[in-house]
Image (cartoon, rainbow, N blue to C red; front, side, top):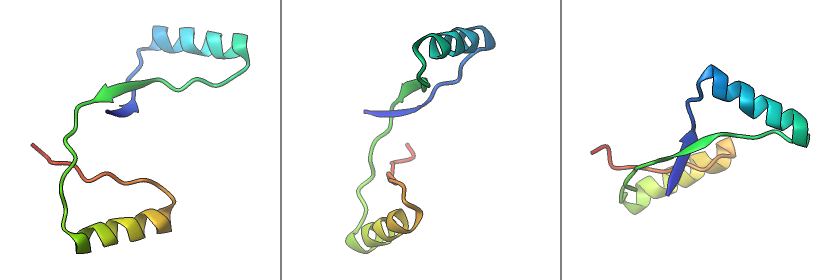
Length: 65
């Protein structure tokens, strides 16, 4: 399953901020996203992995449908 940052309404954001203050730790709101990982050929995979190393992030190829 994949997750993305949740789109939080102002009143809910205020509740999150209040809890962050109470517990002394930041909270990150995420929500599930339905994605189908794409199958890519070995040369493309190598390029993706190279860019991941360069940028220091994880990239996921997905099927746009």
